[in-house]
Length: 430
View 1 (tube, rainbow, N blue to C red):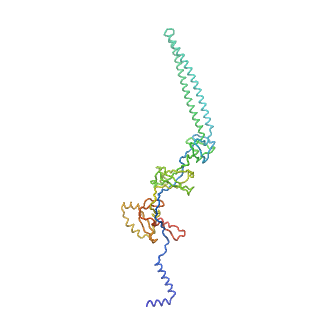
View 2: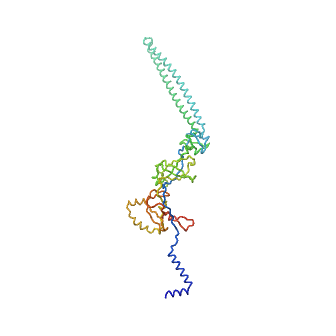
View 3: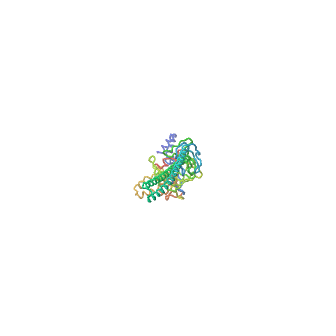
């Protein structure tokens, strides 16, 4: 009866009946067929290969041995014989300081030496005269003494001869003392001459070693003042075929750095080239800047091609650990978490693990959660894996997955034409 009435009503109202039928069909379609998702997960396969753990830092290139060449005397620079990047050899004249004033000192010192030598010659002549007089007086005293013993000379005559002998002895001592003073005067004058001659030689600024001039701080006409400290005039890189990188490593990473570790670095001048170095020294003195503590690590660099120049900024990666032919997953897979709607059992699992002991917590620190792609792209399976060496690009997996299984690494928004990654889910946030 109800069906008969319904059919009769449909025949009387065909337009309204058709509209109601369309609405019912649309509702049924919406309930039966799921709505298209606005996102999808990107998966990558588990593979075998190398894993490298690196410490990133930055630093400046320096010459292996940089020598500052200065001046020990004051004066005006009259000549400069080298320029930037000039190759020099040990002993080569780099510049010259006006020698006029110092040359006058040398002349004066030589005159003082000559005067002292003349004084010494006079003193030595006086010694000869005094010696002769002393010998004459000695013989005369002996004669007077013999005559006195025979009674031919009075006591006054003996006293007079003795007095003459004493005066001759005193004159000889005085002459010898004057000669000694003359020798001392000569030594002093010669020392002053040597000092003046040394300063004269220092007016010629010489290269202490062979190398390349990397900095020039003086020009002709510059006045050099060396009163309180030695002014630097040039900087010479002794050997540019070998250089150093002074890298500043954060205190959180310095514990992983060891001497002789492999280092890769790039410079802005050659962005497509990767240079190789090794850790040569770890400075134990800390540097603090804006409450950030870092340590200086010295890297030894081979620069036989001559591409690297002092002062370049190096972007450094210190390889602190490597493993080859190990099972690995992309590093983002360790951090990535699917949308909360696609992992409904996670809260339950977390409650079960909330009362872990210390041993279990330590074990948990060596494990990680990754998500395996399933048949349904929006129903991934969570997997607990044991991790080994963690690198910047890949993480070693000791156990928990098989090779070629696909792990989720990020989420992609299908509504963006440029196919940009959704950062919120790529970071693993809910």
